[in-house]
Amino acid sequence: MFSKFDVIETIDMVEKEHLDIRTVTMGISLLSCIRGSAKETADAVYDRVMKKAEHLVPTAEQLSLEYGIPIVNKRVSVTPVSLITASFPEESALIGRALDRAAGELGIDFLGGYSALVHKGTADYEEVFLKTIPEVLASTQRLCSSVNVGSSRSGINMDAVRTMGQIFLDTAYLTRDNDSLGCAKLVVFCNAVEDNPFMAGAFHGTGEADTVINVGISGPGVVSHALKFVPDADLTDAAETIKRTAFKITRAGQLIAREASKRLNARFGIVDLSLAPTPARGDSVARILEELGLEVVGCHGTTAALAMLNDAVKKGGVMASSRVGGLSGAFIPVSEDIGMIEAAEAGKISIDKLEAMTCVCSVGLDMIAIPGDTPASTISAIIADEAAIGMINNKTTAVRVIPAYGKKVGDMVSFGGLLGRAPVMPVHTGSAEKFVSRGGLIPAPIHSFKN
Image (cartoon, rainbow, N blue to C red; front, side, top):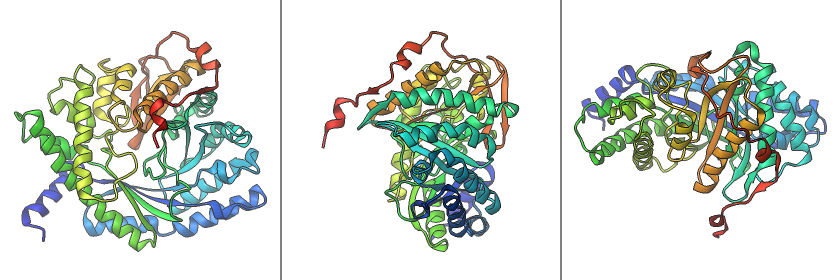
């Protein structure tokens, strides 16, 4: 039974502390859609998404009304499209546009899975597929793309890393009239997971069931608010407060995930525990770190505070659900977190510090605007650095940078909505051209050989 206090507390979390379910994401396998031609496959893909996800949006809206918890995004992830188009990779764009059309007609916010898994090597058909990404992202609205270039088991595919640096620049150019928005829908991973409900990196893994519901929770504002009641607590007690709060947030996600999967006749996949910020005030991961005692996010102590936050969120969440998965941690996107935005505008946080922070939190360098004239080799080197952190530490890391075409350091990019805005941040001017051009495979670390 819920007590009167529990009900009031939940209402306060929603109304005053920005508690929400960030996304209900339906994963759909497309393997049964492969046909003899691109046109036939595109038609089959469109029909399957329309059939499977037909009730996703109205069901999520009904659940939100019934339980009084906002569900911000309704999303779909699909089998990596490079696997579906292996026989006709040069026509992969047809499938991408079919997916985007289905998403638009169903009212789905984002659809992920225009993806390739090339962590150990790039097949001929995947080389062709990767080159279609810029044009497809520029000609669609809801479609998202991801590429996995490394893993702790296989090492880092530096040939793919080199290719992705140029793909970011090409995507930025093709979407230059909208602050290079296409790059906000493109992410490069190391150790990508098959059940991630968050964009732009969601795809439906081949090891998943036919249709799955994955839920991503949120609640930076709730955690920050809880810490205000223990202003003088030591860090042990602060961690306990975060754990208890994460437990409550995760129970809400567990409830929505169970109900959504039952009503949509899909498997209950996972609850992702990640604290996902927004540009709204009171909904910031950066503000949690400052509530712990930092003057501003980015100062010395930030990485330690983030490590404690990330661990406490996971410890609290796993007690609340036996189906924890996805990325699960704390996102630190610059453009999507008001605290990060303001710290970057004031010059208090750098890409170097953000990279250090990714060693202890969820994912990696996320939604960072960089100068439009940044060389492709520098972007590739940024990807390689972040992939190395993931490979060595056996965790998921990623890069989603926006080389804003025509913009220089200090200029602003603005995307609106959850994607927010960000100042263009400086990158190192030293060249990594020769290092990146070597190509090949960075071998897996020695600990990958455990069995």
